[in-house]
Amino acid sequence: MNRRSRAKDESCTQKLKTVTLFIYLTGVQRVTEIRQHHLDLFGREMEHNLPKYYWKSPSQQDLTYRELLDTCRNLPRDAIGVSRGTIKRHVTVMKEIIGYAAQEGHGAAFAPATAHLLPPEERTDAEKRPVFTAEQVRKVFSHPLWTGCKSEYRRHTPGKKVVKDHHFWVNLLLVYTGARRSEIAGLQATDLSEENGIPFISVRPNHLRGLKNRHSKRRIPLHPHLIEEGFLEFVEKARNRGAPILFPEAIPANKRAAVLRDTDARPSYDPKFGPETSLGA
Image (cartoon, rainbow, N blue to C red):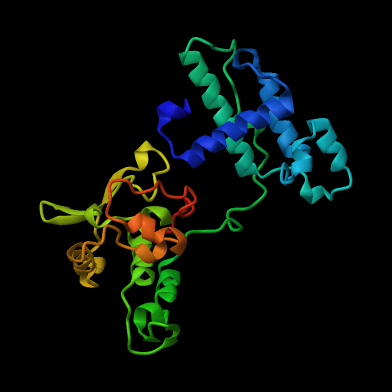
C-alpha cells in the first residue's frame, strides 16, 4: 500500500508505526483476523491506558505491553492516553489497511467502524486556535525584517535597509501560497514558470525534498504583491548566476555544498528537511 501510494517517506513510516502499535496492543498479526472488537480495543487502549510517551527508551522497547503498563502505574493521570488527533490518525490508517486488503482479496468479514473510537472533543470552538487574522498578519510583517532594519546582521533593529534574502521571501511566500514550509524552502530556480501571462510556482518533488503525497504536486499563481516586491527579479538573478536552489541558506551548512554541486549525482536530502506544516493568512 505504501509503495503504490508514492507517499513521502515520513508518511509511510507513520503507517508502519500504526501497524506495529496495533499488533503490540491487540496481538493480532493477520489482517484477515481483524474484527471490530480488535479496533475497539485498539482505540480504547490508546485513549485510556497507553502512556502519552512510549518506546522512548531502549528499555521500554523491549517490554511487552503488559510490562509497559506495569511501569506506568505511578504516572499521573494526565500522562496517560494519547491525543485525539493521534488516535484518529492511527484508526484511520487501520481502516485504510483493511480496505486495501479487501481490494487484494483478503477482505475481513465486517465493515470497520471507527467514528465512535475517537474521544470527545474537550475544547470549545473558542479554545481551538483560529487561523491568523489579517490584523495579526500585518503585525507580523511590520517587523524590521520587512519594513527596514539596521543592517543585514541587525535584522531586529529598525532602520532603512531591507534585505531581500531567504528570511524575507520564504515567509512572504508561505502567507501568499498557503504552502508547507519545506515546499517553499526547497524551491528550485526552475520552479517558477509563466502561462498565458500568469507567473506561477510549481510545487513538485526534487532532490531536496519530496512532497507529502501525490496530490501535493500543484501550480500556485504568484500573488501581485510578490511581483511588486521583486520576486521575479530575485528568481532571474538566481538563474543568471547558475544557482539551482532559490534559498540555499535554508539548507543546513553541513549538506549545503553537496546539494548545490551542479551534478547529476546530487545526494538525496535529509527527510527531515522542514516539517510538513503550513502557515495561512
